[in-house]
Image (cartoon, rainbow, N blue to C red; front, side, top):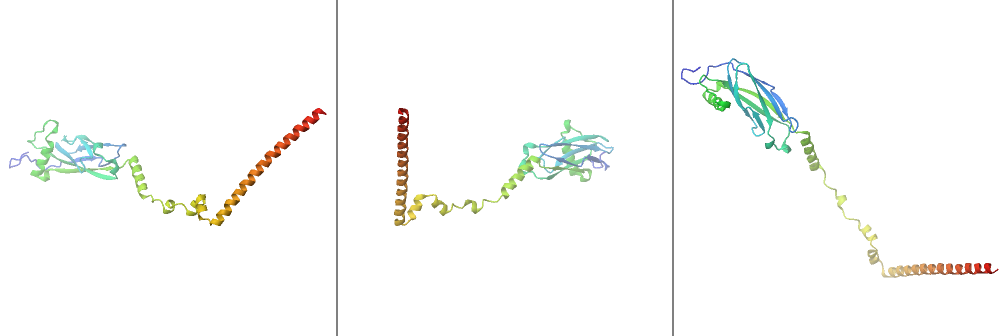
Length: 234
């Protein structure tokens, strides 16, 4: 229907779309797409186009189209992994908006609905009341793998630095006791002389004891040999 000015604006109608569901969840690597059904519950053919608050994050098919009276179409919302940095994902909400209007008497739809978005935008410029709005929402959730990595990174950041007790140098007393030259350097010269003499005496006594044991063993061996020879001659 053309108004008195000859424009292509249709008369006001009760065009209405129903979206089902109006809310859904998407999780990377788990559930990366969702199907939304749009139903035209009016008696007029409707043109629509899709808009979203985050166009780089999602792929929507189709993004525009024509819905006959009392007919339905399915929209597929897919996560665009090529533009997704999973490390930065927390629970977020993204909105999708359907702008739609009744087809005008002079509207000619090109193949594949190529000009539908332009028709809806032009209709909005001519009279905003002719363009209606329907919204639905997607909740983007981080995957369990991403949550685990984020939790691990937070634990690393919050872990305390090593305490001073674990980094302090060894006790000087322990170091000196394990180093004989250091102990000797701190001794009085007289004490050092006495200590050296005592060490020499100890070594001399040990050597004499060793020699005595050797001589005793030789004497006993000779005695046993002589005794053996005496018994044999008797």
